[in-house]
Length: 431
Image (cartoon, rainbow, N blue to C red; front, side, top):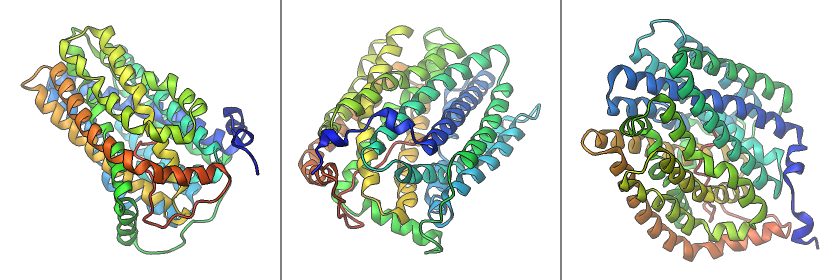
């Protein structure tokens, strides 16, 4: 029997796979472009209106339409070949973002186009998440997921800073043009760098039938529901992103400061996600999920003491370090999903997260109308910590069940899990 040490994969093994390199490079381009455009558009609206609520609603526009697409379109990535789904989504989004570059485009039209563009993103995300398991078998998937999430955070940092600086120097439309170009290049990378695979589920049920099956798969078990809610806690510790513009204004900063604050929300995890995945074993990652979820929210409470820009960035970065508990949920979830329902399950799990983020951003923006931004962030962190503590207690009694499945996997045995089995949830968007 092979030992765990013999099966331990490395990041070099992961990047030696050509298809993974194509998916990874596609993510670098598209995520950085998306974040650059979203930050630029949010700052543009705040600059014109000086309304924290409208700025938060604009930022939420990059998330809220994701729900409809995640629920009703993600199943397309099960019924159609996943490479063709990704390429098609990139081409359509490139065209939509290109329209945003038209001069004198009204703000309401820009937000509407952003809604439509975001609604087309879920089938792309579901297809990429689903195909990753085919490209990277075994423990290499965990490292590949870590590399993807690190890339997502790093590209978010780069795009956020670039969005703030670009808006401050040359305006928002160049940022939108750059985003359109990234979609075109991403489509080429996927088309040329990944191989064609047949559809996983064939014709199957219609979209509503697939949605119902996905909901039953994701929410049909007490253990699974607990893990879904642990993932959805991201909405609470992401509040600083939704009100970054008014928070930066309260600190005496402008667009560049807002971009730096948004970047800091991802910065800590950029450094520690590879280390967490490479050095910490799978079972230990699962046991640490609950305590880390509590810490990632509680770390935001000191914002109530009105720290300056540098200390605020350090606090946001620390919170993001603990937020890497999501990588354990991602890995365990995909190992237990049947291939023919994988994309729809990703869509359902991600839809709930995005609903939470959109509501949290909008509520935080409304609260900032009457409370200081620092108070709103601290309250959100405190509430999230209380929720995480309750969920951590529930997870403590469920983790041994998942641990037994994980131990089988480490010994090279295929886990036998029913459709409503004890499967952790992927609750972090891959883009």
